[in-house]
Amino acid sequence: MLAESLFIVFLGAPGAGKGTQAKLLEKELGLLQISTGDIFRKNLQEESELGLLAKSYMDKGELVPDGVTVAMVKERLSHADCAKGALLDGFPRTVAQAEALADLLADLGKRVALTLYLKVPDEILLQRLSGRWICRNCGAVYHTLFSPPKVAGVCDLCGGELYQRPDDKVETAQNRLRVYFEQTAPVIEYYDRLGLLREIDGTQSIEEVHHALLTAIGEVDCQ
Image (cartoon, rainbow, N blue to C red; front, side, top):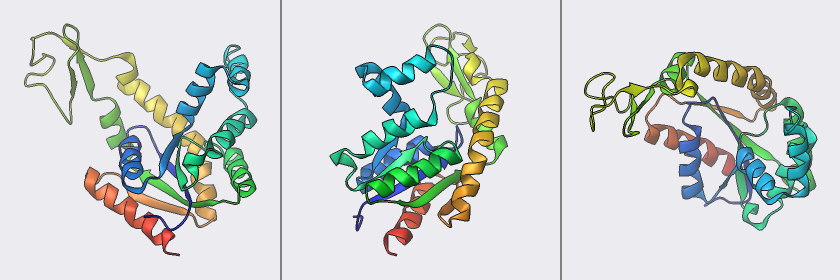
């Protein structure tokens, strides 16, 4: 159990396994995973004032301003289910958002206690992101690393041809990683300067990564 409310920023590139680990932490610690993607979808679906404002930018092909994103996050963190804290996934993406997060938590009498960075080498991230293949006939999903077909390019179940969606191709994966690191490197440096950053080796097994994350959180919670 956590001694008090604990707000943690969780960073990790696409393919690092952050989603899996966030769900495990949420289940074990009762620390709610707050995803900006989920917040955006909810506001857009409910056509809230903030959702409509965000949509006005998105419809013009423009980036949603930090102020709108921060306002959505602030509204979400004010809910009762965040009383114990939250695991912030996908936010902040910029130093300006990180500074705004510090301000909005201060308004709530809270602060970021820890930033977890799930670090995985680029070559492994590429393997994880670009290894998915799908059967054209029955839709069965394979992965060259985790669940390869018995015969390359052929579905085990129906013998159909396996193909890669554009999102799963190496070139797309490389671009996703490039964008992520360009955006996030300054945020990593920001939290490192504050002494809040803890790097976790994401190449370990799921169980080992989970244990390392719990250890890092336990050290902060005992301070």
